Image 1 (cartoon, helix red, strand yellow):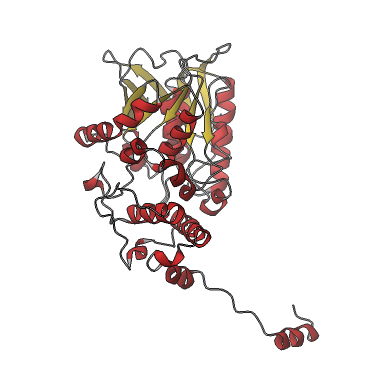
Image 2 (cartoon, helix red, strand yellow; image 1 turned 180 degrees about the vertical axis):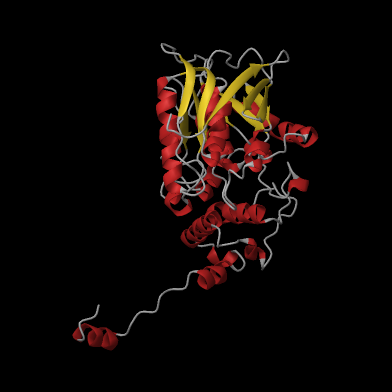
Length: 382
């Protein structure tokens, strides 16, 4: 340990199958729906679950349970990276377990893919299905849907059920209130979700003994990750979610979100399952008026020439692109992708206001006249 204060984490397996993790005075509850599947022997998941809080508080983490040496090395490296990326918000801390496990073998039940119903996960899972992948799905209740909102989450499951049954051998569900803990310590900086990768890794590692690996579908193409940095799931930190046998693997970082619409348009089940609205009152349906709905409609039209029937409001109003807040790096990246696709497809003029918004926010630098450039050169300036 590094001379800092140290907090002990304990894992309790409840009679009803729930997992309760205590960390100092704090408690996180996890409710897997398939009791026989989640691990009771390995505690690596707790390292990923609690690391954002430990980094935020600047305390070392000692977990009562068995973890691998790889998990310790990778967790410590993750903490160092995030402390370098966000100094003042996160601190480098040390992680340790009271016991060490070794000699485990990969699970035999195929891949476990995270599925939310959004564009990224739906695209990635559909592409894997068409390639013949052997996969099950894991949907986490407590991220996009409040962990206490069972009715709306049930609506999500029903909306996405036909697609899930089509592309996967099995669908697992897990419910957790960990975001309440992150919110309490302000683990996420304002306007940037950097901890969702830790949640997904923790939930996936609950099933490390059954499946070969967990698969997360990328939000951004690899080059776009530089534009949105620091972002919670990325090509640098994702590979560190590994215990040496089971790991979180990333797919789909070879395409942008607009490119994904081309494949999605080929599957009616995929289109009908899509849920991406930021208006919580409309979920799991898509209002068609919030910035994310407008962006998704425009992206589909730019890439394919069609707006599928996945929004309540199916139109693109003349001022619709004003919903983009281009001071936010993720929105700016998606907007530039939208503009690029509209330009290449010849549909730039068919998306109201797109070029005007682009020129307003990304004006071309004026070129100096040849005479002015010669005068500056003669004066020894570039």
